[in-house]
Amino acid sequence: MSQELYTQLAQAVIDGDEKVAMSLTKEALTRGLNPLEIIKEGLTSGMEVVGEKFSRGEYFLPHLVMAGNTMKASLTWLEPALKTSGMVRETLGTVVMGTVAGDIHEIGKSLVGTMLAANGFVVHDLGVDVPTSKFIETVRETGANLVGLSALLTTTMSVQRTVIEELTEAGLRDQVKVMVGGAPVSPQWAQQIGADGYAEDAAGAVTLARRLVGADG
Ligand code: HCB
Image (cartoon, rainbow, N blue to C red):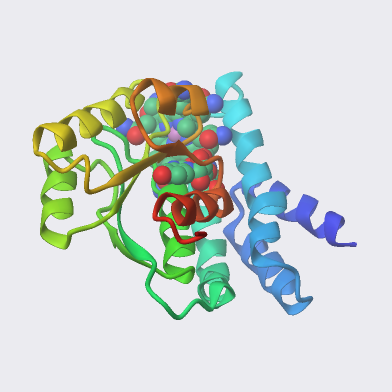
C-alpha cells in the first residue's frame, strides 16, 4: 500500500507536478507514514530518476528546476513533522552548515540542517554558494564545534578541501569537526581531503554528527 504511494510520489517529482506531490505528501502524513521514509522512498528516489534522465540528455535544466521546486513544496509539509521527530531537549553542539561556493544545490543541505536541528544541534544555515571566508568567519563568531559542507557538483567538491585548509590556516581546525556530503562525495573523498566524516543522507548525518561531538559516549 505505502509502496504504491511512494511510487506515485516519485512519479510526481519526475513530472515536476507540485500539486500532485503535495497532495500525496499530505495523504502519506495522514496515513501516519514516517516522514524520513516518505522523503527517501518517494521524493529522493524520484530525484534520482530526474538526475539519470538529465545525464542521458532526456531532461534539461527546466526539468531539474521543476523537480527541485516539487521536492521543496513537499518538504514544507514534511519539515514540521521532521522537526518534532527528534524531540531532543539538550543541546548537543553548534553546526555551521552550507553548500560550498559555486554550487546552488539547496535541498539536501537544508534537509540535513533540519534533521540536525530536530536532534539537538543549534544550526547556522549559511545557504548556498557560500564563500569559503563566510564558513571561517561564522565558525569563529559562533564557536561552532561542527561544520557540514554540501557539494553536488564534481567541480565544487574541491571547495570542501579548500574550506578545511582555510580552517586550518585560521587556527580553527582543532575546534571543529568537519562532515561532508552530496551526490558525488564519498567516504574515500572525505578521507582524502582530511574531513572527519561522510554522510550519505540526512539520517546518516545525524548519526555521524552525534558521534563526532561525542554525544554517544
Ligand atoms: Co543539478 N545537477 N545542476 N540542479 N541536480 C545534479 C546534482 C546532477 C548529478 C545531475 C546529473 O547530471 N545526473 C549534475 C551534477 C553532475 C556532476 O557534477 N557530477 C547536476 C548539474 C550538472 C547541474 C547544473 C550544472 C546544470 C546546468 O546548469 N547545466 C546546475 C548547477 C548550478 C550550480 O550549482 N552552479 C544544476 C542546477 C540544479 C537546479 C538548481 C536546477 C536544481 C537544484 C534546486 C535546488 O536545490 N533548489 C538541481 C537538481 C534538483 C538536481 C538533482 C536532480 C537533484 C538534487 C537534489 O536535490 N537531490 C541532481 C541529481 C541527483 O543528485 N541525483 C542534479 C535530493 C537531495 C535530498 O539529495 O544528495 O542533495 P542530496 O542531499 C542528501 C545527501 O547527499 C546528504 O544528505 C542529503 C539529504 O538526504 N548530504 C549531506 C548532502 N549534503 C550533505 C552535507 C553533509 O555534511 C552531510 C550529508
